[in-house]
Each structure stands twice: as structure tokens, then as C-alpha cells.
Image (cartoon, rainbow over all chains, first blue to last red; front, side, top):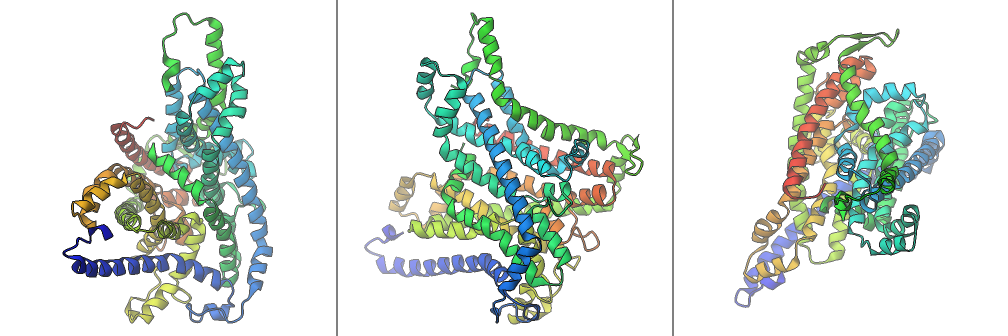
Amino acid sequence: MSATVAVGRARHVNVWSVIARTFLYSFLICLGVVVIYPLIWMALSGFKDNAQIFGDPFALPVHWAWNNYVQAWNQGVRGYVTVSVLVTVASAICTVLISAWTAFGLTRTKMPAKPLVVAIVLGGLMLSPTVAIIPLVKMLQALGLYNTYWALIILYTAFRVPFTTFLIRAYMLDLPGDLDEAATMDGASEGQIFWRITLPLCRPIIISCVILHVLFAWNEYLFAMIFTSGSDVQTLPVGLTSIMATHGTNYAVVFAAMTISALPIVIVFFAAQRYFIRGLSEGIGK
Amino acid sequence: MVHGAARPQRQKSLRARFGNLLSFRWAAIALILIGWFVYYPIVDNFVVSTTDQDIYTGEVTNVGLANYDRLLHDPIVLVALWNNCLYAIISVVFQVFGAFLLAALIEDLRSERWRRFWRAVYFVPSAISITVTGLLFYFIYQPQIGLLDAALSRLGLGQLVQPWLGNEHTAIYAIIAMSQWQGFGYSTLLFAIAIQKIPRDLYDAATMDGAGAFRRLWSITFPLTREMTGLMIIVTITGAFQVFNEVMVMTAGGPNNSSQVLGTWLYQKAFIEDNFGYGAAIAAVIFVLTMLTGAAQLWYTKRRRVQL
């Protein structure tokens, strides 16, 4: 905006510009407080005792009761974290591999009826889990997968393959094809080209896809709630509501459990922000 | 290159043809998974919706369209539908237009460090599980320990203090407000990415011509992100008709069904009252609504000549 400071009306513009800027920054800061303060309050409340929680909500903890966090961890959260990590990692690997295979088939091979396959895979983007939930319950019960990790791993994969394929395919379409043409000349098979050439070239988008999937799987609630009932197969989001039900009166432990389950994903986001944003911009830019 | 396979190859030998068919193996797992767990349940849902299932005896009776007839006379379905519409309207205002303005403000900042900082700060709630944010706001809205009522009394607005989730008139708005808090950073980030793709020299030229910040917003940023805005409106409305998690965690549809949405009413009917047939009929309504918005999205992207 400094460029607008035309010589003749420099002072006039400056005054207004300063006022506008002050307003802008105050607005951004207020909004930032509204966004972040509840989260800080959650983490701090985890350090309070019940008397303090029922006291002034804006006060800082008097005694920092780390014990609440230890208690939350030992009374369930550890188990939920284990299940969440397992389901998230397994479904991330399956989703990204299957999507990369599909995207490779759609961009690099002579597969017939490609537009149809694309339509089928990407059509899955429009179908929501809510609509499929009742038949899925019947189906997974019949398959004996009800209340197992597999139910979640399979469903997270099936419902995320369309989106992930969409991202990887878009990236592969932009990759130059001469490397794999040269490899074909040298007698490399499609499989070799995929593992040795295309997949390594797709590394950036693969990382983005993994992060987007981790964000989804770590936080997913509907499937996790309906398909698991034993506490040994429940993921964090569902486990939290169980903790709420059993420790409902001991608020501090619930706050501690919430903070523990939010923390890893916030750290992942900040550590991998670059890849995350790339994934999003690939997703909307195409 | 995409359509390489479609090129006419008259002298294609049988072997080459077989080789091409073999390429299906790359997509096979995806097609099986999606067909089995995504497409088939949708079809099956319509079958289930025409039946009445006794969960104790496992007996299934065909009842034709009786479940749909019941749906038309269910007052809670209307409440739920209205709540979904409220969700859609309020989310479009905040998460599309609000987020657009915020993204434009942020991208107008001069320092890239600060731009990145604000984008990240506002995004944080979107990274957190809806169970956590739902529970968090359940506590925030609580009269005894919550932040909101404490803040209101402190600001001298004591007459507004109330159990936000326990009041039939405020419950759904309290939930929607939480949802805006959680979601606006995500759409702001998407708009910021779209705004970054606008060539800088357009702004420089406009500035040279004496266009102020508002003028640049209205004549450059808005028109050049209009497609993104259109897409976001459709996506937001689709999401609003599928909403489930936050309502489930915060009120489970209560008090007195005042905050039911279609998703939670489906859950209540199918899984609490064990009426799969009626639940499937509600699911069919959600399906039709999301198909309409999905068709709108397809039409919109096609018009942009985006390849699908």
C-alpha cells in the first residue's frame, strides 16, 4: 500500500493508512485470541483440580497438577492412542499405495476405458459415509469384521481412495513422460517403472496425501463410533466420549485427555504445513 | 497423453489387446474396494429402506414405501431438515464469504512471515478432532464451569447467561457457532491459496492506477476467485447436509429433539431405536440432497472446463 502514497497527498493517505492498519491488526489479533484461547483454556484446565475448575474459569492453575495428565494417560488414553496410531498408519499406507497404483494405471498404461474408470473412482468422492452406514453395519457384521481394527482400516481406505487418487493422478499427469518412455525402450516392465521411476518422482504429493489422510483418520468419528464397541479397539475420538462418560465428574482428567489427543495432530500440522498446503492447493487448483 | 489409449489402433494384435486388459490390475483393488464398500451400500440402502427388520428374530418384512410415508409425517424430520438448512446458510456466510474476506486481508499483509503466521493460527482448530472441539465447547457453554457465561457476566451481559446447549432455542445455534469456530480457518487457507495464484502484477498495475485496497478487492480478488467461491458454496452446503459429529458429541439432538439434524435422527432411529428400515429411508433423503449438490458441483467444474 506504500506505493499509493502519491507525493501530493502523502500525509493524508498516511493517516488513514495507519488507522486502517491498526484496525486490521486489532481485528486479526482479536480473532486469533478467540481461536486460540479456548484451546489454551483446555490445556490449562487439565492442570486444575475440581474446586478450581468450578471457580474462576479465567484463572491460571494454582498448583500444576500433572497428575491429571498421568491419570488420563493411564486410565484409557494410552490404549486409545495405540489403536489410533495403528489404524491411522495402516490405513494411510493402504490408501496411498492403492491410490498411487490406480493413478499410475490411469496415467501411464494403456488401460482400456480410462474415462469410465476415472468416473467410477472419482464418483466415490460424492458418496457420503452417513448414507452408507446402515448397509455397512449389516455387511461388516456378516463378514465378522464388526468391532475389529480391520473394519476401520478397510473403510478409511475405501472412502479415502477416491480423493487420494484424484490428487496423485493430477500430479502424475503433470510429470514429464520421457523418463518412462526411455525405460520402456530399455525393456523395463510397468511394475519396474512404477516402483523405480514414477513413485519416487511423486514423493512430494505422496507426502501431502499421507498427511491429509493422517488428519482424516486420526479425527474420524462416525465409523469409529459405530463399528467399535470394546475399549480395546476404540480410537481416540470415540475413547474420549467413553472417558467423558466414565469420568464425567472429574472434569480435569477429561480436559487432560482432550489435550493429549489434540496435541499430536497439531504438532503434525505445524511440522508438515508445507506439504499439507501443497496437497490442498493441488486438490483445488486442478 | 491422457487419452493415449483411446487412439484408434486398427492393427492391434490379440496379444497387445490382452496386454492392455492386463493394465486393469493397477486399478483393480481400488475398483473392488470402492465398489464393495462405497457404491454397493448406497444401492443396498434403498433396499433396506423398503423393509422392516426385526433385530431380535432377524425377520425381514417388505413394507414397500411405508417408511417414506412415515417420513413425510414425522415432525422431527422437518426440524432436522430446517436445522441442516440453518447450518448451510450460516456456514456459507462465515466459512465462504467471511473466510474470503479474511483471506484477502491476510494476503494483503506485506510480510510473508505474518501471512503464514495468521493462516496457521486460524487453521489450528481444523486440525483437531471434532470430538475434542465438540467436548471443549460442551464445557465452554456450560453454565457452572464454562467460559462463555463467565465472560458474559464479566462484560455486564449477565442477563444473557444461560445453559446454551440445554436451551431448546439456543442449542442448534451454539453447535453451529462451534462449527464456524472450527471450520473457518480451513476455508480461509483454501481462499488464501487461490488468492496467491492471482498474478501480482495485476495488483501492482491497479495500485499504479490509484485503486485503493477495497477497489482491488472488489475488481481483482473477488472476480478472479469467483470460481473458487462457487465451489466452496457447493462444498459447504453438501457438508451441511451431512453434518453429524458435532451434534452427536454436544447434544445428541437434544434437548427435546430441538437440535436434531438428519444425520443424528438417522442414528437415533437406526441404532438407538433399532429401526434400520426407517433409518435407511432418512439416509435416502440425505443421499438425494447430496446428489443434488454433487450434480451442481459437477456442472460447475465442467463449466470451468476442469478435467475430471
